[in-house]
Amino acid sequence: MNKFMLSAAFAALSTGATAQTVGFSQIGSESGWRAAETTVTRQEAEARGIDLRFSDAQQRQENQIAAVRSFVAQGVDAILLAPVVATGWDSVLEEAKEAEIPVVLLDRRVDSSEDLYLTAVRSDLVHEGEVAGQWLVDNKPDGDCRVVELQGTTGSSPAIDRATGFRNAIEGNDEIEIARSQTGDFTRSGGKEVMESFLQAEGGGENICALYAHNDDMAIGAIQAIKEAGIDPGDDILIVSIDAVPDIFLAMAEGDANATVELTPNMAGPAFDALDAYMADGTEPEKFIQTESALYTQDDDPMAEYEARKDLGY
Ligand code: AHR
Image (cartoon, rainbow, N blue to C red; front, side, top):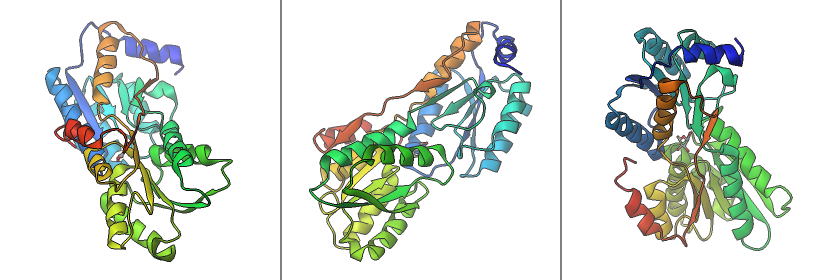
């Protein structure tokens, strides 16, 4: 089906109504950020009188595919999908399209054709990595800097794109080298465990100048490992990560972390707005509704940032 035909199919839904029943296939609860996104999505749905049917996939794509199929069978008005990995979505997205149920992607990118979903609410994931990498370029100590990288879930778009962005930023700086890179699966325990092996492999940590973690939770786990190794995180090893969860601001306030790139957990607000407009009169949203990627450092009053976020469901 071409773009015009897809619009026509979706336009058939445009009855002046808003979505009453929405299925939400969530990845799981691997990080504080993910927990906050779930909380905010539930709150946004409740405030709008939407019956939100929630499914926790426990990190498994097959569970997400089954959940989307179940939402289609239930005849929901729309589906929110936070896709755990970037590939393998074509068939199930086609099934939703055939059933004329618009799908909105949350927080991650997929490799499928844009015609298969209504819109994607997410950040520019490559840009996030670039912001983190540029912070390191601007703040590294003089001389050579060996970086260790904790990657997100293998095959997920944030792991792929945040790795690319960071490399874009450090390209051309001959003093910065990514010495080791491994997945910590976006979890605190994964971050701690992998950091322990990095420290062991890198002279007990002596050879490491900085840690780049694809999310704050892995950075927080790594900070614990660094402290247990008797090294000073935030000083001996610089720490830059992504998400801006409350605990990373506490770590920054204590001097244990240096910088984070914010990812808002409120993907659902813009998603429901787009669905409302679409279902009311067929207004087609942009395919990519971009959220901000602001950088925070120890200079940005981390305790105030912690206080502002601590009750938001992280
Ligand atoms: O897709 C967004 C990423 O997923 C967040 O940065 C990470 O914390 C989460 O698990």
